[in-house]
Each structure stands twice: as structure tokens, then as C-alpha cells.
Length: 502
Image (cartoon, rainbow, N blue to C red; front, side):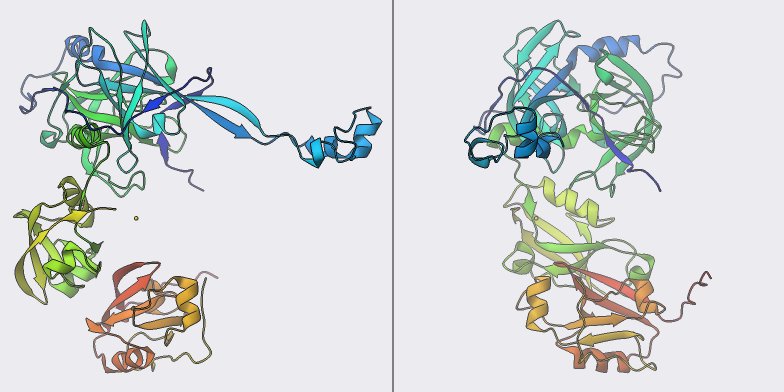
């Protein structure tokens, strides 16, 4: 079995409990040092990174967060609650009831103090610091030390954004050395980078490597993923620290590693500074992060779907939220969004990231392919607010038709209640899928709702059966609803089933 691959790079330790202040008060954006010029790539091999470290390291802080953890009493507590046990050892009953405690109640759970260790990046002279949300999440108190532990401050949590795993702290300090922020959008694979932080709490540590990839996503770490991948060593305690380029400019915030051992194995991830900068400004100015909301469910295009929809790239719309910007603009299920403001859309993740970077109320232009025709649609973004059934009267399509081995029925009211199916949703409920069928290999399962077959809407089971009989092509495009999300699949009846192990 493969161990859980994603590891946070902060270190839990134990320290005394104090208190932390939080604030959602709007405030002006801080003054930042920004150098957006491209990295210098023609200097030849470096003899030493010492000048780079001297420039960047004073901007890296150590972040300690403390929280109270309540844990139940040890397993021996039931024995202490036993009145015979108490009498044998001469332990008196507090209320004479013989129940082992005041009015028979067990003792309260124990409280312990747990501390996490991470890093942060000073970004302004007036004391704003960027770090990871998971470093300070749930903390009762956050402390920041500077100059390799020589100065210590109680930090205010200005704001947190769990969707990107970013947080902003504020300290009242002088003689700070804010970082110079680079332009992460200009990074290229092979660029030299350094990771600076406080791994394992041992003090300032610098590791070197290169950019291994950009735009990494689909890792399941955060809601919004657009990671820089690097082989510069990132270890527990590096979370929230700086990833800097060869000119000492911060281009990323170190956040996680991919590991089978729990230690660094050459695959680390950092949040691009462009994303971190935008989140920070929103937290400081508004006390929260406001993101544009289009109101569509989207799906990436597999090779089967690109053939079915006659497109090479884009994000496939599988559902439109009622009352949303998408519905107002006229987007429909089955549309493929291929461009956003003239820029090519590669997949659903990149579209979601791009939409999320706009503020609510922004007017955008979408290039859309609908039934083979190219359209341009304008939309005004809103604001972002996140058991198997069978039936006795199920019907199975004939073996001569499409979707062989699939049983369907009308959606019963009991199913709507158990599966949280919206009352307005119409279709055919799948009650049975043969495991040797092409439909099963494509991902159809009991409890799914069939909404469309080959782009034709389904109202009930009878229509699903009739449409499946009418289909002559052995490759069928099916729109399914499952757990509140719609998605397209291609059922290929021409595929040879895999050999079964015996």
C-alpha cells in the first residue's frame, strides 16, 4: 500500500499556552518591494549563492503557533468509575452515590498545549508577514522570532484563506528587512531557486535546486492549486518560508512535499508569489478573500471527450447554477469554454483559477464551442459563497442497443431524499450495472442519474431505454449526475473487456 503522499511541512512541538488576536478590519494595502523583471539566465554556473542568501535571509521569520488540545482521560478511567474498585483502594465517592464522581459524572477531559513550527516571509516595513494557513490554523497564540531567534513578537492574525493555504500576520516591529517579490509568472523549468526557512526548528537553513515544473495541480492539497514544483529540499518547519530565485527575489511560499517516507524526496511545492500577493492584499484590505464566481460545473476533456465534442482543449460545462452569472450569460450544459478574455483555456482547473483571481462584478469574455459552432459570450461575475438504490421496476436496454448491462428506473421520491437529488432534476436512476459491461468500465454506477444520452435530454427511464435502442454508434456520450456534480463520460462498446484473473 502506498503511504499518504502529501505531507505538510510544519513541525508540531510543545510550548506554553498564551493568547492571539485576530482582526477582519479593513486597512490600506502595505508598501511592497517588487521586482518583476525576468530572471537572469545567462550568467553561467554559480560559484556561490552567498550574496543571494545575504539579500533574502533577513526577510525570513520563524513562526510558532500554540493551541489547546482536549483529550479524553486514559483508558483506566472506567476502573476508577467502578465503585467496587474505589472502595477497595479507599477512594471516597464525592456524592455518596457510589458512581465514582460528582453526581456520577466522569472527570473532564485533559487539556494539553500543542505548538506548531513553521516559517514566514516579511513583505513590508510595517510588519506584514505571509505564511501558510496550516501553520497557524486553530492557534490560541502566534509568536514570530526574527534574526535567527534574537527578537520575538506576539503576532496578530490579520486573515486566513484555507482555500489557498495562506495567512497574513502582523507584528509591531522596527528595523525590518522586507523581501523583494519577483514575478512567478515568468518562471521557467530549470531556473535555479533556493528554499529558506527553519526546518525542524534548528535555525536558518538554505537549500538549493531548480524549478522542476510550474502550474502543478490536481494534488488534492488545496481548493486552488497552481503550485511551483522544486527539488530544493523542503522539510518540516519550512512551511510558509521563502522560495527565492537566483537574484534573491521571493517567487513562492513553500507549503508541502510529495513523499512516501514522510521526509523530503525531491518533490516539493510552493505557492506562486503572484497568487500569494493577491490573497494577501484582499485579506489586508477587506478582511477576507473575494473571488469571482461564474456558476458552472466543469470537467476536463479526455481524449474521448475531445473527439465527441470536436475540440482540442478547454473546460467542459456539465452544469449551470440557477441565478448565476453563467445562466444569465446563456451558458449551457455541454458548452466547451475554450478561451477567457482571449487567452486559451487548457483545462477546468486553470479556468477555475483564472475566474477566482477576478473580483466580483468583473466583465469577462468567454470563447465557447456549442454543437460545433464557436460563440463569444460575455458574463459579469458574481461573488463566490462549496448508498446504492435499486428498484423492482427497473428496465434494462436491449442487448442490441447501447448501454448494455445498465438497468434504470424513474427517480422515486425515496431516492431524492436519500441521495439529496434536487426536486427539479429529471432523468433516469441507474439501478444496476453489470461489472463486465463497457458502461461499468466507463464509470457508470448504481445510484447515478442519467441526464443525457448523446446530447439528448432524458426525462425518465422510458426515454433512456428508447434512446439507448435508437443509438447506432457504439461510442455513446452520457451525462451523469452524482452527489451534486454532473459529468460526461464516453461509453465505448467497441472496447475489448480486460482479461479476468483467475
